[in-house]
Length: 139
Image (cartoon, rainbow, N blue to C red; front, side, top):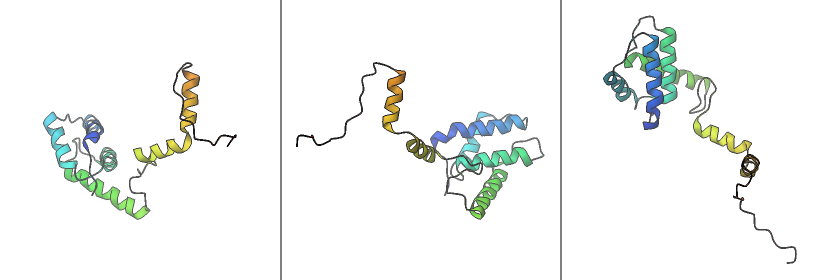
């Protein structure tokens, strides 16, 4: 089951407050905490963002939708994800999860390249990468 974690709180609140601003519906701190408490174990951050976007795109009433309505958008997201075969945590807009981005970064640049960049940017930086053990030519 998808859920959000403490590091997701800030982006969650940013999306929630964006909806509040969009709908001209200021959200008190208590109301914000209530949305978090009600939604944190029911959807992922990507699903939440999708629900917020859909609400702002499709709702016609000037009020932040109640959690039940937002959960309908989450279910819609899941159905679309299942029907189209999206990867487990892939976003519908094609963006990647943090883990996927880390894997891409590691595939694009080696530690040696990082060291060379640091050395060129900071001459005199004394760290040297460990050398691989190579047999002596005299052996």
